[in-house]
Image (cartoon, rainbow over all chains, first blue to last red; front, side, top):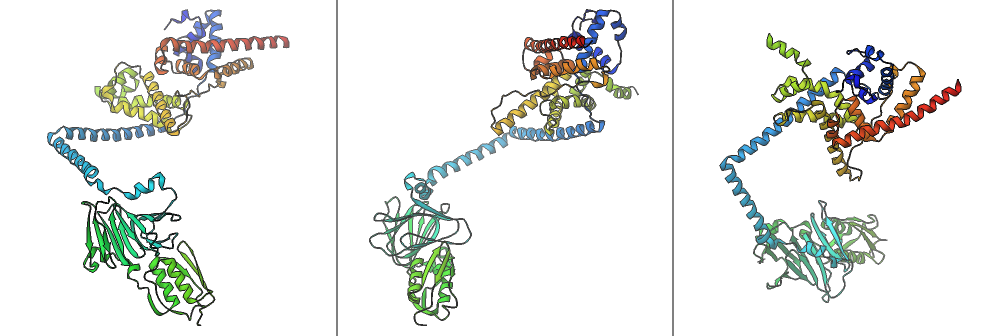
Amino acid sequence: MKARNQYKEVEDFLADESFRLWMKTQKDLDGWEEWTLEHPKRAKLVEEARLWLLAMNVPEDNLSQEQINTALQATWMKIEQKEQGNKMEQKVIQLWNTSWVRRVAVILVFGLLSLYAYNNFFAEKHYSVYDEIVSNPDADGLLEQINNSNKPQIVTLSDGSSVLLQPKSKLSYPKVFTGNERNVYLSGEAFFEISKNPKKPFFVHANEIVTKVVGTSFRIKAYQNQSDVEVLVRTGKVEVNSEKANQKKIVLLPNQALRFVRKNQTFDKITDITLDKSISSSVKSIEQLSFEFTDIPVAQIFKTIEQAYSVEVDFPVKTLEKCYLTTSLSDQPLPEKLKIICKSIGDNTAYTMNGNQIIISSKGCNYQ
Amino acid sequence: MNLKNQILNKDILDDNELWAELKAGDEQAFSILFKRYYGCLLQYGNTFLPFSEKVQDCVQDVFTDIWVYRNSLSSTVVVKAYLLSSVRKRIVRLQQRDRVFNKSKSVDAIEFLFDFSVEHRLVSDELTAGKVMQLNKVLNVLPSRQKEALYLRYHNSLSVDEIAVILNVNYQSANNLLHRGLLNIRKEWKGDLTLLMMLLMNWI
C-alpha cells in the first residue's frame, strides 16, 4: 500500500480500508482528520473520495447472531452427512481391496455375463413374432387391441369372427380382411370363434406357431414371457404349424390340445386334455359354458352370453319375458350367435354392438 | 489456564492463523471463520441469485467442503478471496446445471445484479445529496463486470490479483475493468457536474 502522503487519485483513498472506516463510521484510527486539514489540496481529494463512498454504499448484511448460528449448525449437519457418505465409500474401497471380495466379484460378473450371453444367443428363440410383425412398417392398416384390464375383452373382426381377449394380451388384426387369407397376430391368450369360410382360411400367428382354421372355436395361449405356447380346440378342426416351417403340421380335433415347447422348438400333442393339469385348470368360463339351449328363456341365454364374453346385454325384459328358445350356438362366433338368437325371436328383433355393450331391440317373439 | 486463554482469544486471530488451525482439524477455528464470513458471502451470492434459498445452500456447501477436504487445502491462501471465489464458482456451476435442465441457451457466465445504494445517513446538505445521487446513478449503469470488480475492490478490499482470479481473467484485464469503470464514471459525472454548476451559477 502506498503511504497516504503519496495519494493522488480518488481510487487511492477508496482502496484504503482505514480511510473507508473513517468515512463510514467516523472512527478515525489513523488521524485522518488532522492529516486532511494539513493541505487544502488533500481536503479536495478527500471530499471527492467521500462523495464516491457515499454513492457506492453496500448495505450491511442484517443477519442476526442467531441466523448465523443456525446456518453454522446446518453446515455441521451437512458435514456429518458428507463424511458418513465418504466413509461408506472408503469402506467399499477397502472391501474391494481384500482379495476374496475381488474373486467373488469376478465370478459374479462372469456369471452374469454368461447368463446374459445365454439369454441373448441361446434362448434367443424366445423372439417375439408379434412385435416383429406389428412394428413392421408394412403392417400399416393393422388395428391393435390391448387388454390391460383384469377382465376379458371381446373383439369382433370384420368377417364376423369374435375373439375373447384375456387380460395382459394383445391382438393385431386388419380392419378389413383382404386377399385369400385372414391373418391375425396374438400375444397372450385368447379364445377364438371363427366364422366359417373355406375359401378364406384363418391364420393366427402366436409366438413361433401358426394356427390355421377354417371355421371353429379354439383357444391360444402364447405369452411372450412364458416358455410354452398352448392351443386348445373346442369345436371344428385346426392345423398348427411352426412359423419356421421346418416342422410337420399338426392337426387338432375338438378337446385336443397342443403344447409348443419354445426352448427346443418341439410340439407336444395332448389328446386328452382332462389328463393335462396345466391346460384343464386354465379352461376359461367361456369354454365350460354350454351353448346348447333347449326351451330356455331368452333372458337366460343373454345371461350366458354376458358371462361368456364379459359383455353387457341390454334387452327389453318385459317384452321378451315369455320367449323361450331351443338352439345350438356352440360353434358360432358372438355376432353369429346374436344374429341367430334375434332371428329365432322374430323378424322385428335386431342387435347393435358397441364395444362390450350389446343392445337388443325387439317387439316380442313370433309365437307369443 | 494458559490453554484456556488461548482458546478464548481465538476470536482475535487473523484469517491465516485460523485457516492453519482449521487445516489441523480445529473445529473452533472453523466456526469462527464461518461466523466472520457467512454474511459477507451470502451478500455476494445474493448479487447473482437475489435472495434465493439456493445461495444459503451454496455458501454452506462451500464451508462443508472446506472442512471435509481440509487436508487437501492449500495453506497459502487469502481466506476471504478464496471464500468469495468458491461461492462464485459454486453459483456458476449451479446455474449451468439449471441451464442444462431447462435447456435454455443463455450465456455461460453469471451476472452481477447488485445496485449500489446511497448512504443517506451521512449526507447533510442538498448540494452533496445531488452530487451523490448523480454519481450513484452513473455507477449503477456500468457493465455488470465492471461493477462487480468495483464491489470486490472497494467493498471487500480485495487486491487486483485476487479479483483477477475470481473473475477468471488475467491481472491486466482485471485492472482494465476497474480502471474503465472509474474512468466511465468520472467522465459522465464531471460532465453532469459542470452542467449542474452552470445551472447553479445562472440561478445566482
